[in-house]
Length: 386
Ligand code: GLA
Image (tube, rainbow, N blue to C red; front, side, top):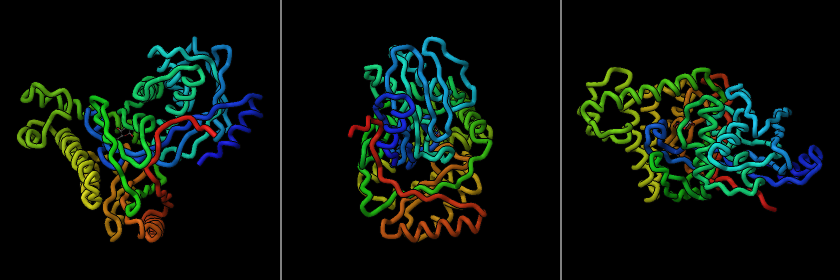
């Protein structure tokens, strides 16, 4: 957790003023991977790692930002947008500000200081946590109340326009709207969601970070999106009413999949089945059938590895270690893939042994260190009041 008092003190000594603090969490996705940009379903939860933005309003139109963890500073003018896609953290900050402005939120200038406990590059959405904490901070110190879904959409737009990553809505949505003790079943078409209770008294959600991030991640992500769109185009020839893979049932895909060239066929197979698995997992979670959720997670991983091809050796090793561990109910890669983390459901009384097994076996197999984090499902973004 971030030390709020220390952050207030840092802000005071840097800017000579009092700050208000706004937090937004990272996330782990239990199931529903690479479905969000296909108008499908996802089942993420917020983790207890977060980004905190300290903010105070300014009388002018400038935004000054200090990235405390990097020891870097930057500023921009709300009326004179800089160039997007500079490849810097500032793209996220200025991006969310300009996206909110473009949505009619009249922001004022501000001084900001940002710090985070979400490990970057771990597949736990450090960028969404940054966008949502900064967006909430800027809006609130400008006396503007922004509906949470709007805030999430502004974060996504920052990624599309300012960062150049064509992400879906999942990460920003769960960072903005999560609730303690729950996973969120999100319909990424209508943006309706329901809270699914996740009782962790006997089962722990364990996140294992491979500590690798492969170069391919963003180019392959955009390539998968394009392959899914190609699949929809072809399938429209026989299913004229479909707008996205979300509209294709498992039975329909089985009937028509020979029309699709490879690898489009396997990509579509993953997405169509993953949507079904996600709905089944949410139903199993509601019945508290964690073993069934685990089985669906295992299948999700195989599909991501073989059909969608977004896993990597290190992720597969971690999933295999969990698969051989008696107290683990299920395991899969989480997030975009090509490195980052796995999510595991582990019997609470076996967590310590799991941690040790993962650490030693992962190291033996890859020569690398895994980071293991046990997280409760936490709250979405909000102001830190003391
Ligand atoms: C990244 C994106 C999300 C989602 C996942 C894959 O985390 O930001 O929108 O597409 O990958 O499920």
